Amino acid sequence: MSSSPLAVAYARLLANPDSPPAKQGWLDALPLTVRAAVTEPVPPAQRRALSVVICSIDDARYAAAAASYGRALADWPHEIVRIGDARSLADGYTRGLARTQGEVVAFSHDDVAILPADFGHRLAQALAAADIVGVAGASRVAGPAWPHAGHPYLHGCVVYPDGDGYRVSVYSRQVPIATGIRVLDGVLLAMPRDVAAAVGWDETTCPGFHGYDVDFSVRATQHDAVMQPEARQLWRRIVNQGWTDALRALHPTEEKLYTFWDYTAGCWQRDAGFRIDHLLCSPEAADRLQAAGVDKWARAQDKASDHAPTWIELS
Image (tube, rainbow, N blue to C red; front, side, top):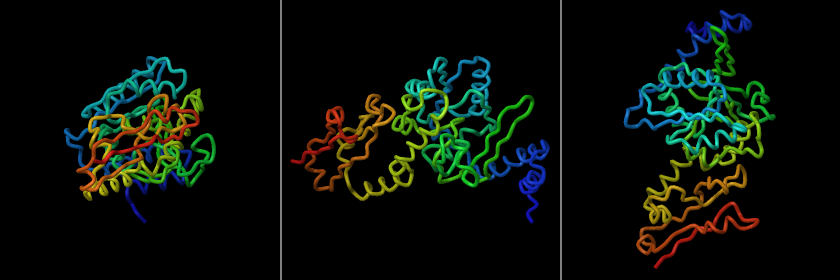
């Protein structure tokens, strides 16, 4: 039997699940496993700026959360954006995203405390393996809240401030990251800003302060094939075989070179789309490439497809 600190703490927790000392021992031992999995610090030049969006009407809670993020991101380029008058979290996060400048955006509750001092490095490691990360979630969807999935489908660990200590909810100990997650807890959701813009927050479906996390993460998994790092790597591998991406070659600086806008979350109205229709030219065709574009106007028509026609002209 293993005598590692984590194994001992876990055995004590199983024997005394309601014991505060046993829970504290588990909490103390968990970081040992996580720290062992953390890679070398990200070099400064490779640290993508992080924007943290917090919806809060409580000055004291916001100040505490902002200070916590400030300590955890002391060595990481970041900004904190507060929305103090959100009609709903979907509304607040949509407006918050529009104000952010970072390449990566984290959407956070205002009652969180970020404990690790190397949070930026851990987050970067997680985002190298997934396009959307959180601290807890489930590998199946079974109801309007992610815990409805039940064990063994629940994963992650959430530590809540509670008086002078912490309250710990441990769902699984898959570290440093659980895979196959289909729905995430909204306490903290982080992702590249293009993913946040493509999926969007749907205030029509979720006009309040609950259910938005399930709605967002379930819709994100619907785009799973094009958002996964493996799919993007395969795309780059294809292009590197010698093909020319016609649209990008003729529009190299166009930020919103989209061909698809989802029907949900007001994606078309917000111009929150992404490009999944590609025209690749062989070297011979690339030499004859004269023009390329997207007939965006077609997407605005009644009963339009969620895709817009994409075209090229060859001499």
